[in-house]
Length: 298
Picture 1 (cartoon, one colour):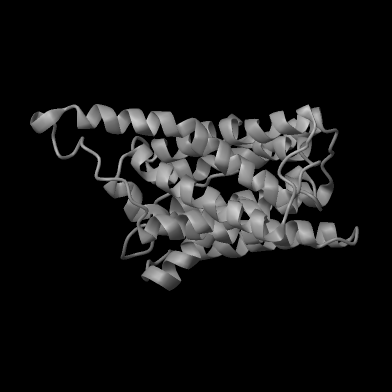
Picture 2 (cartoon, helix red, strand yellow):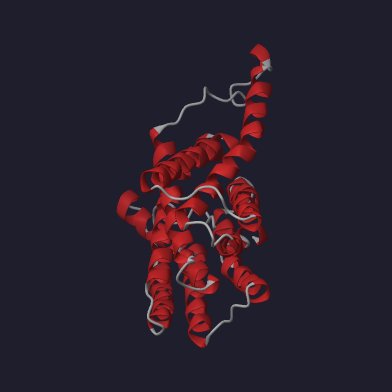
């Protein structure tokens, strides 16, 4: 939780770089760090010989369509969310992007027919009421782009979780996250190249922040959430995401000098309450649980 909470801090420290470049560096550096671990795992499994169980031996590397779709959704998530931090505070951005568990419930219902309870529906409404207060707070200072972009990032990460469910069940941790992270990095690289954005010539502080964004919140934080799904109840993991806006806001107050207003506190409280209602009591009277995954920030 602490690792993911540092994501927005590193973005603010790397403000010299374009937003999409920051998103690309986050995913690309994560891929670079994970590549030797992924390669070692495959080599070790390959040396197991005929006695190695089929469960332990990884399949030949390939980017399945589901990997590509999940990676594209993850790339767009970071593109929107990182961009949102140009126009709003860390607190508002992380609170808005944290609504992804609520959006997972909605997408799962529309795409998979998964049902939610009355309490879950009430939680969805409460979360969106809180998000509305956060948007109103930014509108008062004349800029709606921050919360809207963060909400778009929440939609994309919700799509990412829904697509990635079956992939995570069929593969071990690195077998799941590495192809998805690679797909996201390639998608962001293409976007950066097409737009002709700057990718070099930054100050040392910016370069360190760009690299840290891939190592700390992505390799440690985001990957740890995926690992936890195999060891903790999904509802537990999905509610851990609530720690990110709290910790990130405290870090922003301490390291960036950002303050919290009354509307942010009120809207954040409603968002947190709604997410808890959806995550813990969102199961419908029939059908699978709405939430089987947690968030990634970040």
